[in-house]
Image (cartoon, rainbow, N blue to C red; front, side, top):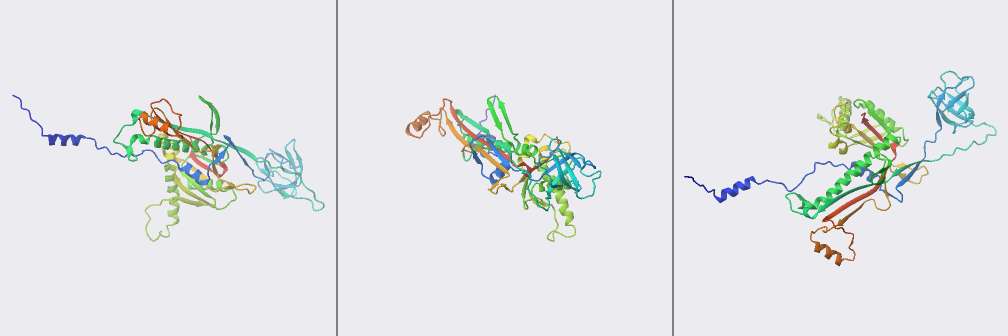
Length: 444
């Protein structure tokens, strides 16, 4: 004989309630906030519209005259072989690395030699104007009586260029995607998130483009495409200060690198931002924090003990450098790429130096930002929706028809796809005045 026991309704509902998932409507992002470089670039200057995808930028080089010695001076004749003699003129006073000076008495353009008469010494000796010294023109020494003019030196600007390149992102949502969900977006159903998340993915693309793009004109599966010259490529290939480390960064190496950056400009009061990964920031705070601690051993800071130092600004040799952690360098995609130097992610040990000081034009007509964005034609960004069988806010086909029929402004550029599309496009590029920038990174 079997016995059937009926569970009271109140208890069964209670048990069912206890087994239901307790889902929070809000969704949090495991992605980082990346757009530090993009924000800095926008802060320095607005993007400039260009009628062509290739933007040419002219610059005037160093007006000093100097050339490397490749054949040491003949101590009898005074003839010196140089790599380039085109800007040396008779009557110039030139000097070698030891500040021994001579007067140019002849220039042989065919043989790439100049002839010098001694100025600092009575006669030339071995070691004067040695190989790999720079022969540097200091000034003109014209005769006292009836001096006359010199041949003209014409300076032609060097022309570099930036390429604007097309970057796109798209999203599609089918009619059947428009359902409710425990997960909400901005207080509404999750389907409302699709264009916002597309914009976030697009912004992340731009950050990587400005950081790591190489300047190229290439042909791909759909035709010709351009890539702009990003920050890293410009520093390494266009004359920036670059240091590839084979050991951990030290304070003396860091200071020497900053001195190299000081020498590119006579301008005082320059402000730099150093974008770095967490490993680089930890290393800098360790070596610079120790320096501050030891400098303060004779007195306390405000009469209290110091439990930790968070160094976020450093001044050296006339430069002010603000430290900023660049989350892009700590991205999950780089985490497994460990350096043999310290066992930490190699990219996280990188430090990018950006000069925030505008560069004045040689003719006094204005300034240009050290990081300058360009965009093709008038629009920096283009975005639009393309309705298919459904509209933006409704899956009802009759609603789409009514909207198109009652509006004189409605576009008929719709498709037959059972959904709606969102597209965003930017035809933009970056130009970096690379000699004002710097990069310290671990060797591969």
